[in-house]
Length: 480
Image (cartoon, rainbow, N blue to C red; front, side):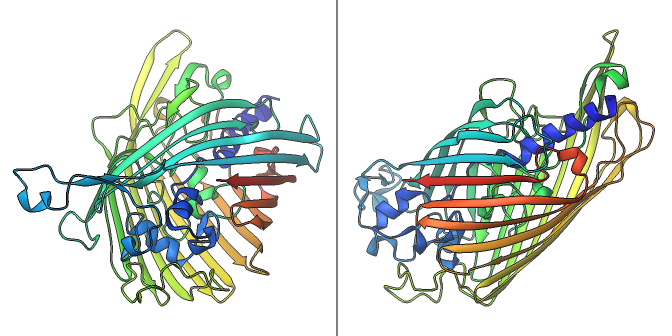
């Protein structure tokens, strides 16, 4: 019975991380459709996944080449252009959006239990998320993003929990010239860059995040471990607070960042308070570091360097196509504090140094997209005083997406998690491996309204995620 309880704890936590879809900074923000008087299909294959035009628009700081020629809503100028020639004896001019840069996103989820393991056959999360997004530019070389998201999650059929999250960033574009080779971002970094370029949670089709970004070190059962409390390593590949330098060229992209690390709770798990900032860490003696690199062969250049005047906003009959091959590299190095308090109140504090290294590839050809990823990692001391053993980890996935019609996209993803957990640690289940296949389809009801139907079959680890295995998820989302 206690073993089942331990498994349910891990199930609850990892399921929370999987279903907590904190919005990305490119989830079909209608602000841009209004700014340019164009369809969401201009930038999206099927939102939130970007097409070649949208990827370039994002990388270039939410601007098109010759952006002023395409804008239908002109910004408000804060100072005359001539002030640039007078600087430093005048304020450098800027601009703000003429109309409100706010967008609204709503997500509504129905979950159907197919194998009788949930307390109720049907669960209604209506809504599952309500999201307010503000995004845009403050002149030619400043971009900004922010959101406030109300979430309601049931963690595998349990009683729903709800909370509000906030995040924001400000980015200075083209620090040395006007070519976006060096951009500096402050705030909640990593939404698009703390992962593989070819497999980003902000650019997916389904109802749940990639497994490789959402798992974290399994917790221990306090009763079996004889502890009053235990704080382990809560790291998962997700946004955090910090500073990032990034840049883009014709065929390459890079990002390097430094973040606080040592998050109080894993990403996607309900925070201690009802309102929290995404990626808030309590810090250690040092900081954590990450990098993302990508290189593209074929297809549309990321910097739109071959663009002809007047072609940017053309939405063709096959707007999702971009025959290309993309290679991606991701790395992270950090330190987490491991705290254990026994039943008598004695506290032990140790540090867990860890790293992740991932390789990814994505091939797009006509109406199909294929992707593969492999991420290796190591934690040298994840259980502190309970065990001096290190833990090796491996995650992987294979993914295929297709366009049957412009409005219908079937997809499938096979993915797994392998953990070399130590034996004999009190309160720890050493068998936490997962292997599963996700199958689903996305229906674009309108350019800004979609429905996703998805289910999963487990080859290994079904008992760890009873609320996810053999459950049918139906998601309806709309933005305006």
